[in-house]
Amino acid sequence: MNEKKIIGKKELISIPELELYDLDAKVDTGADSNALHCDDININPDGTVSFTLLDEVHASYHGKRIKLPIYKMKKIKSSNGMVQERAFIRVFVEFFGERYQTLISLTSRADMKYPMLIGRKFLSHKFLVDVSQEYLAKSRIKEKE
Image (cartoon, rainbow, N blue to C red; front, side):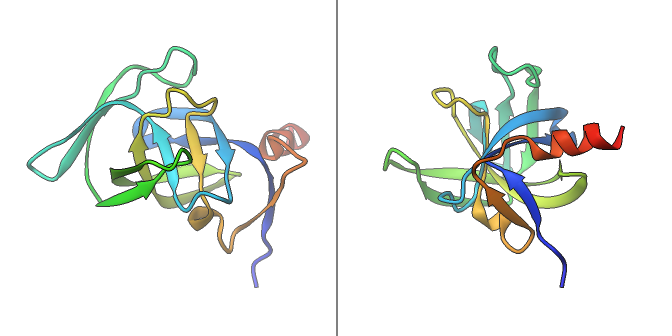
């Protein structure tokens, strides 16, 4: 059996396909899926989604327009109770020193402190969350240096 890694309530995640590196993410065991903040989301007739990674607050964002295939569309109930249909993309992420393929829903998180939310489907069978800790992956990198 693989041992689960202990992570904090906030961690850094990178999404190389989107050229997003060391993005602040909130680990949320109450959320079913991952969510990424983006602007100007357009569902295209050819089965793709276009969106802009623009956010003045988060240094990782570069303002580029991205177009990717839609993996699936799904209705999601957000933390404020509103239901919205979201496009999900399938990408590789770098998290805690490993590379994982995962699904991420695209949504506006402009009013949220963290541009990325890591949900329990991604965490399941791989990680345990210690809510008293933050950025454990970052401190592990410093220990190895």
